[in-house]
Image (cartoon, chains in turn cyan, brown):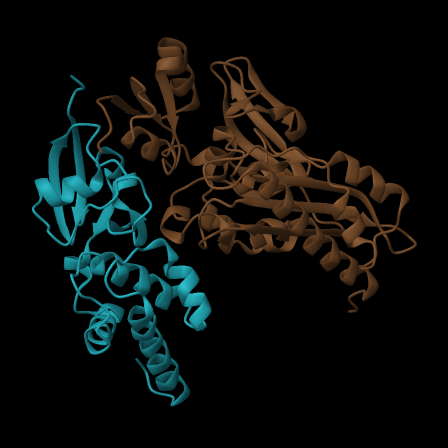
Length: 166
Length: 291
């Protein structure tokens, strides 16, 4: 049996020191070892985007990162990112636009949408669709999700145009 | 599914990597960004005994102009290429193609070197490396050597890397004043593997025609697939918007079919892609950009 390895990392602002088997994915580590239930396990081969989490501030597929490989990194799940900054506005827009039904994809959708808003604030509807194409939703048909993201972007550009500080 | 058991070492130096490769041979796999390898391990298509993680080797993360080439360290990610102003200035074809590689969450970790080493004939970077006449910088215990892209890709997932060697960097020629290029691919969904795609690179002759053209397809063969016959025709017959379709019809590659598309469909789509690209280039040549 492969030897367990010691790791230390910061998850949602808290330092975690533990040992893991090398084969354990980051997403399983978050969900099963740390009991963070916003960490969703979907297809396990990088296609569906349900397991999207932040690693050192950038979104990644939690099923394509080893927990042992995340040693000395900063990890954030929806629980850590929720209710502040871009996430608060996105969560409100997803709610208002009915951009979720079962909720399974929602954590990944919100984190992907937050990265879009942070890095591509001028995205057109088509560009939103392209950027979000790595995240599957089996309930909404995507229209409402794109609507919600568009709402947040246009509210932001309106507030910037109005000279207000966000 | 979950990956089977394996051991894991985060290498602290290239010497340690070479020692582990020497000790474990084929049972060791290099872990770069992991965006392909970990997926194949999760599917149990690959079961290495030990992963040697090269993510901690900062020397492999450099991205800069060195002499007359753009040197991209093996561990530079697709996202870093996508966002780099140096790349945009000196190798804009890479900037254009990077957003088409998978999805941003994957591009944030997946690496240029990993994609080249894996040599998936459906992926963008091997095709681009051949189209741009790039050079693979490989290193082993015996030192470094440069392998031209034309000689690097041998067959499906098979490269000219020797046992014990790894890719440390990729060298790409800098864009010159007369360089032109184009890339396009056909996908069912943005970010998916393309059904077919193609890159064209070349220069502009004094008469204002495409010269020294290289046409390379992805998704059609076991390795980046050059359209030699069309390249040769372009040496003697000027490319114009009127002749683009004729060149496309002359395309004589022999794609293999897959689960979703027959060989005939792929050839048709390759011709469609080629005609689009040549028309676009012909238009560029007819209306030279000023200023």
